[in-house]
Every structure is written in structure tokens, then in C-alpha cells.
Length: 475
Image (cartoon, rainbow, N blue to C red):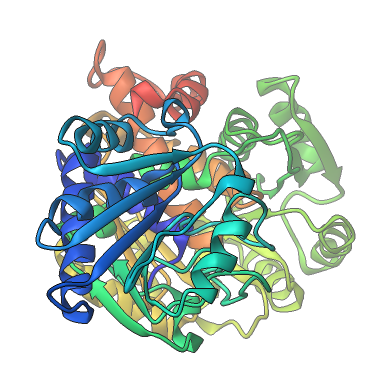
């Protein structure tokens, strides 16, 4: 089962793997035509009502596979406004090949031909709310026609993610959806066909440009709250700066008073909040918890904390009382296996930390992806296992991030990762944020490796993050 947003990401990943969108449209259209043949009689009339998106493009392809029938194609709008090049090319192929293909530029002039089967290809996934003209006019005519209705991907006016159906939406008898079923289709009173259109498994499992687009911030928002520092000061500073580079509005660091000035010295952009003590203690944890709960920001817990008994006790105390979102990294990971918490945690262990948490002790994380998924299911939290290849899983769904370079074995790259994930969690679901964060962090390292494979520093990766995250040509 896959949501509309996730499906768009998978499509983009497939294109990056070399499976052209035009090729997928050809497969989708052929699948629609196969279903039409199963419901149509030999002399039936077929009417295709298409929108200007790729949903319509699928139907334009379908028309070419239905030459044994009398087929009419109605485009809602002007062909010059078709939204994608591949859909426009398939419309032009119909025009140049002499099909009965017409533009409907005025909804008052919409006239559905007499038809035994109607193909609804007006609107696809991601559309919600009542239909507006001309789609509303067309939907009324389709529903009143008495024809068998075959919908492309989802019926127009139907929200495939939550199952809401517009009051004036198309009532379909058959739905041809692609790659995987959509959540909202379960409650639909229609025959559902899930068509395999040739998307490789890697497009869904391996993190790619579609995953980055899914998690990419479209506004400057979020104020991650980094709780770290004590024995080590660079780690929380790197995490906080990475969060800013990944789109956070502000970045706060809560640190012992003894090192707060040093952390502030790394960057004037940070807001450092000192507390009295040399390390994090249970008494201080209560104060930090109150702040985190008041502002409901994503917390990053662990960078540079150290492993003193009172610090680990404080970390456990904080997480057990916290019900928000948190990235747990470094030393704080030690307390997670024994936690009972309502918090949403993204745990970011390296291979050694994963083994100490009770996960598989392996060199090749990708080869152990199923074991890591089972471990995450038992743990009850998202795991982002860091290595040459990263494995990201919530215990049910698993992604593999293959970006990165050997130069990233330098200290601090895990801290930048924690900050990136925290920033993206303001805009995306935790698993999506973790997957995109791993990919972006690795790609930033790859950009640096183009000029200095082994000699770069984690702090130098910070400057590469914005271009990696927002410049689509670099994905």
C-alpha cells in the first residue's frame, strides 16, 4: 500500500534509475486498455475524458491500444496547457494519427458522447475537495450516462490517501491503479486492479531524489533543541549548524555552563542556553524537559554528552517523560533499549552502537537490512543505522541510502546527520525525514570528495548542505 505522495517519490526515483517516465506512462496506458477490454463488448463505444496531467497522459496512451473499438477522447482544456511534456507528446500522437480527439475549452459546451464504457482520467492522486468546472460538469455527465466507468489510478474527486470522496466526484465501477494499491481505495465500491508498470523494487527501497523532494522544506521553519555537550563540544555545535543549513529557523543548544561559551564560539548563529553543572544530570533534565514540552520543537539528544552514570540516567529520565519528536544520537543511544516512552524517536547508531543496543553486529548493514528491520520493530522506534550504506527502518518499512564516501569516516559526520534529520522532521514524517537526511548527508560528502576525497572535515560539509538539499540538479 502506498500514498500518493510516496508514489510520486517512487516515480522520481525510478526516473533517476533510468526508467523514463514516458516508459512508465506507456505501461500505465496499456494496463488501462487491458481493463477496458475486460469490460467492453466487441462493438462498444469508448469515451475517454482526460485532464491535463499525467493521469490524462495515461489515458491518451490507452486510446492507442483500443483501436478495435470506436474511441472518442475529450480533453478538458486546451492542449497547449497540458502540464507535462510526455502527456503532451501522447496527445499530439493522437491528433497526428487521426483519432477522434477533441478539446473542451468551455464547460458549458461539454457533451459526453454516447458510450458503453467511459474512462475517467480527469484527476489523479493528491486531489481533494469537491470538483470544480469543467471536471464537475464532466463528472455529472459521466455519472448520469449509465456507462461502465473505468477510472485511471483513482476516481476523480477521490482522495486516495484517506478515502474521502467529493460529493460530486466520479462513481467508478472499475479502478486501475499503478504499482501498489492506495490506502483510501479499500473502502471503495469498485473492482480494483493493481497494475505492475515496471517500476523496479530499488525505486521504492533505495533512497533517491524523490525521497529528498518529499522531505525538502518549502519554508524556513522549525527550532530544533539540541541537548548535548559536556565532555565534547564540537558535536552539538555541528548538529545545531547542520539543522540551520537544512532549513531550521533557529537552532538552540542546551549545554553545561562550563562549555557553553566554547560551543557558542563555533558559530554566532547558535543560541546557546547554559545550565549549571559540568554534565547533564537528572536535576537539569527536568528543566530541559519543561522547555522542550513548552515549545514542542524537535529535540536532538546525545551529541557530546558523555557516558557518566548520572548523564545516562538523565537521558533516560528525559526520554521517558517526553512525548514529542526526538533524534537520539551518540551516547544517549545506550538508554533507548530499556525505555518506556511515548516519544517518537529516530535513533541514529553507527555499527558499533547498533550492536551495543542489541541490534545485529555486522559490517555490511545493507546485507542485514531485514535483521535491522526486525530489531527496530522490537525496539518500537525508527532506526537509522549509519555505515558505508545506511539502513533506515521503522520496523515495517525499510529504506537503503547508498550515498556517501569513505572520506566521511572523519568524526562529526554523524552529528551533521542528526541535525539534518531534526530539521527535516519539521516538514516530513519521521521515516521520510530520516531517509532523506541520510541521503543528503552522504551527497554533501560526495560533493566534497570531488576535490578532496579524504582530507575534508565534517564542518566543511555544512556549506554543502543547502545546495545538496535544494538544487535538484545535484540530486
